Image 1: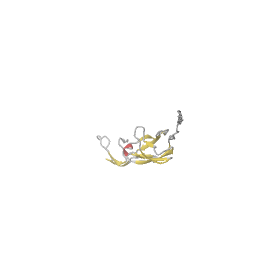
Image 2 (image 1 turned 180 degrees about the vertical axis):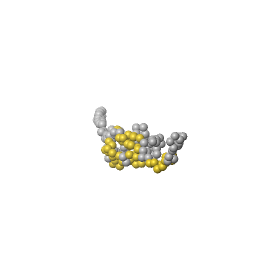
Image 3 (image 1 turned 45 degrees about the vertical axis):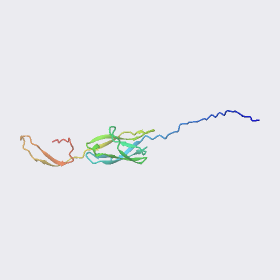
Image 4 (image 1 turned 30 degrees about the horizontal axis):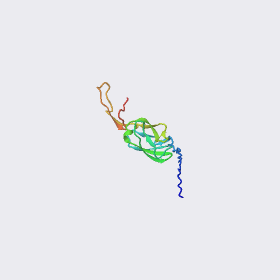
Length: 154
C-alpha cells in the first residue's frame, strides 16, 4: 500500500534590519595660519592653516563669496591652500574658514585674515620748490609701493 503524505511547510523568514551607525565628520576649528598676513598686489601664495578636526576632504574658503581654495590635507591638525593672486590685489580683511562635508561636518569659525598695503617710500619730488603765489603746479612724486587710490597730503 502506497500512502502519500501531503503536508505544507511554512517557513517564516525573519529579517532583522538595524541601523548602521555612520561615522560623523568633525566640525573643524582654526587656531592659526601662516603667513599671518600678505601684501596687496603680491603673487599667489600657499596658506598653511592649523587647527583641529581636519579630514582628507576639508576645504578652505577665502570668504563666503568665493569658491573653495585648492586645499591639501596634511594631517588632522594642518591643511594648506593656494590663494590666487587675484584675491589679494587690494588691501582688505577677509574671513577664512574651513569646511568639512557631511555626514556631520560643517564650518569652522570665521578667522580674520589681512591683506595689507606696503608702506610707500618717496624717493624724489619734482619740482623741489615752487614760488609762493605762482599758478597751480603739477608735482611728480617718485618712489615705490604706491597703491591705486593713494593720496598725498602736505
